[in-house]
Image 1 (cartoon, rainbow, N blue to C red):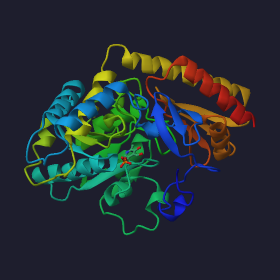
Image 2 (cartoon, rainbow, N blue to C red):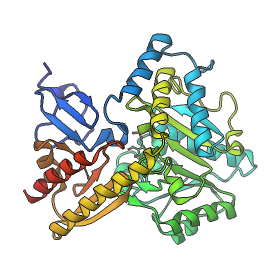
Image 3 (cartoon, rainbow, N blue to C red):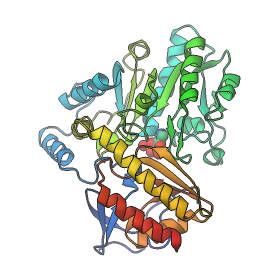
Length: 395
Ligand SMILES: Cc1ncc(COP(=O)(O)O)c(C=O)c1O
């Protein structure tokens, strides 16, 4: 039994589903079930967290095994799962070292802090500004909120943190115009998620790398949403063939358990000394054991090429729906299995129609439908989702 006056106890901070919000009680693979036994095909995927679907057996087993051994220890000591996870991330990404925390915002906080400290350690005491992009999303803490280039998230929280400037996403000239003697870094999402599913252009990404190299700035990629296989590459950076100086991960990494990671080059990592940054729960052994299981699955042969193939299949289906509803569907975009469908009409109504018919999708800004299915979703599930979406659009 669940309480009926949930709003009395839970703070009202989430735009929950219009109409009756389901109480989800169980999940398996691509499906979740509510307290009345109704089944949903889950294309929200915990907002890019459930990359292997719900309760993936390898993740569950790894967490269970670790629960029996050691649940938590202070970061004053090493644990095997944490070191193994760091090793695997480093070996597979070209980074030199990892710092673990508990969420995407915290990973970005760590990136912002190390970028500022790096500039100061190099003797550039006035270099503290970070240029981020319009329509970006980097988190809800004061620093990451300020880094987020969307005014709607700033309102009511002023004064914001000093030291952030905004360039227009995919407009290199506007980033060049913002760069000055106080700049220490540029931070972007290679594929913007919350801002409406916008993919960076090759020219933009390579131009930012050049800008950073020429002006001695650090390039930070926020891969919290688009990293870890979502684009059909381990990192979105791999798709562009560019190495960032710092990048951040979270969401998919823990297979549903909370973890964030900030990774960087040796040069940057050596900026931090004991006491410079910390997190009580960061790198918790149970979560790291689960994360290692996630990473091992993603790194299996053909996993990433399959994500690309499935992403193309879903995108083709969405494009076909655009052809069928040209007045309603304005755009279909994205990369791999982070896809968006921009509507001219009420996206929340489509989201509701789909939920009633057993498909969970997410609607951003009232008119952009975002699809973040598990990376191991199969073709039959994609066909089912497309059929329900077609009905939802028709309605
Ligand atoms: C790109 C990006 N960065 C950072 C965050 C913040 O992550 P968290 O909610 O885990 O703090 C998000 C969350 O949606 C995100 O999409």
